[in-house]
Amino acid sequence: MDPGLSEIARFLGLRAPFDTLAPEELGEVAQGTEIEFYPSGAVILSEDGGPVTFLRVIHSGAVDIVHDDQLLDLLGPGDTFGHAAMMSGLPPGFEARAAEDTLCYRLPTGVARPLLERARSRELAVGVGEPGHQPVAKLIRSPTVRCAPDESIGDAARRMTEAGADAAIVELGGGNLGILTDRDLRTRVIAAGIPASAPVETVMTVPVFTVVPGRLGGDVLFEMLERGIRHAPVVSERGQLVGVVEDADLFAVHPRSWFAARRSIARAKDADSLAAVARALPEIVVDLHSSNLRALDLARVLSALVDALTIRVLELARPVDQLPADGLVWVALGSQARRELTPASIQRGALIYSDAPPPGWLEAVTAGLKGCGLTAEVTARSGAEWIETSDQDELGLTVLVERRPLWGTPRDPLPVVEGPARTRVLAALSRRALAAHPPTGFDGDSVLEHDGTRSNWLDIRGAAVIPIVELARWAGAAVGATEGSTPERLAAAEQGGVLSAADARTLTDAFGLALELRIEHQTEQLAAGAVPDDWLDPRALSPLTRDHLRDVFRAVAGVQRTLSE
Image (cartoon, helix red, strand yellow):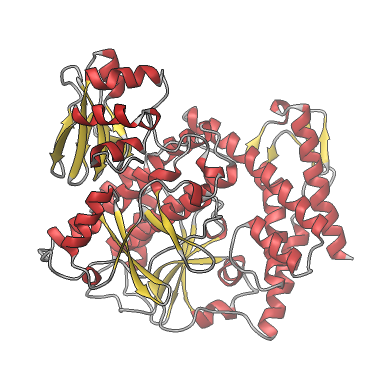
């Protein structure tokens, strides 16, 4: 980037369609650009307003796109809005509202229209070109600003503005990092009345979630969604800072409604507003599926949103003056713990406690979950009770080998099976893995079940998903892998020598196919306004799909026979 360019030109030059302009053209665009500031809550474009005569580019802050009081999208730094209405000469048809204090660049029609025509009908969106499949090191767009922990907040903010960066990395020594973001400046400095002369270390975030340069953008994006963050320093294996990747750098062709929903969940002030956000989840799932997001990735997004809903329900239900400071831990179980939720999944949670929660609290949590449309199955026991019941019921088994902590602070170590208890648990898992029999194939338009009976419907969950999940649970637990997705457990079992490479690969591929069919079926039902389920009509399956399913059934049965010998 030409160092002689203004800050506006440098900022625009990093983003489409301005990145196609020569330095001289960028300079001309910058000269015709005006700067606007909108405080949080201010309406930038009204739904029924007059024709839009400006293109706006967000420099910092965030903008909610709303229609009929429903949040449609969340825009951040570098995003544009108003272009479609500007080109058509019609009112926008939506409301653009500042979600937080926001700074925009405003380009008049005469400057913006030639650029939009040059880009033809291409959407003005960051992240084109499948960034989800590229290493994050190649996706960094913003310059890296570094500062010392004792540098003043004002100096750091000034250098961030000069560089056009939304974050500064605080180098703490010994390879440790902190981060200061635009949002920190608004919420922790301005809103809190902290003087600009105070050192950065008083308001920075530490520790910081970092990623290595080779991680794929899609994986990092999902993890940022789960953590509710927007920036991640990229650090080499040798501990060298490469740069900072932002969520906007990682968006591909997938809808951004999932990040908007994640933020709305965190903002919900009561059960009613939280339930309103939850009602939008089916539409988000349909949008994600229509954007060709892989089934495993879609399930991970849905799981992250349900995680956020669950945590917010717990936060809203918590009577601070009654609950202990520690000793209560909420864990996700089953498909939610594996991050494999689908629209028809049953969300299950468990409370592991040192001291029992106050009367009525668990009921309030359950009611809050149900108010969000989560078909929650909730059980509370002490750590010792979970171990005692580990081989007596499926729920106790799941808490020990398929849990993921979501909320709370433990006082005592979470239950782990060791010694004789471990032997009992592995035996129970093995029995379950061998008892989940898939069908043997198809007979005309009927499903040929394991016991020789025929069915007019295929239960894709019971026929293919559950048998593979149970095998992965047993094989993973046998090598000490009690966390992660089904494919990750299968990989661990292969590395630990419990499964052969061929069996692990076969089961992983079979699971991927079964999950794709399951989610495709359920999203079609959601789009049609129906309640999603797992029942597929064999008559609607193509010959190729039937052949693939037969391979799945045979693969599972083959591994089961090997394990039973």
